[in-house]
Length: 220
Image (tube, rainbow, N blue to C red; front, side, top):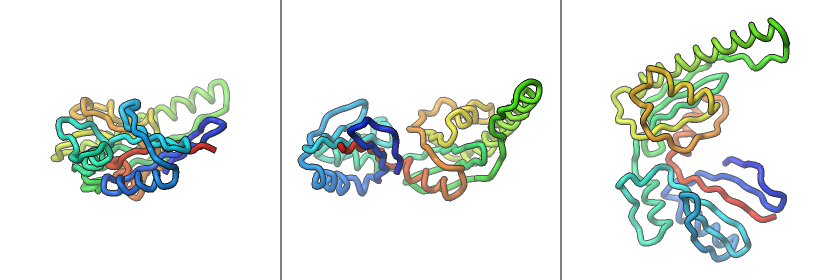
């Protein structure tokens, strides 16, 4: 679960809930905060509770001609999130990377490892310039290597969507490498904030990428 800054009179958090668990989560939200009303909001479904709490529900991927089944908005959203879509995940930070193919919240193929990109230097003059060039070279080597690993892992799989995570700039740079040219046009799903990537972090990211993202605002 993620937390993020909020206003002085509210507390915000983000939860990732699987389609299977979504109806139960919504029932518990209503039980804790009072009757809820549904509204369309910013591409998602906003649940506004009697006590002022809100929950913005977002599908993990577009409908793309395969709508979820059900008689209510929550049932249809749960059904949509329960569909199996094949995702290509690229997680990268200065300390490491993890790439994988995901479907149904599970990793079917992957590669992870550690690489090092130095932090920024506070030094000035020529020393700072040399440090900056070294750091840039390390970052370029990292993105090129990770792109190659991702291309190898993705090969042979029908990747429908891409998920980036970790360092936004580095992961975007990976996708711009020539090795991933064939995937550059794929729709990108919501970015994932993760710790230094490894196999464990990748498995959690796979679960979150296939879940309904819920932004909850609790009044204080």
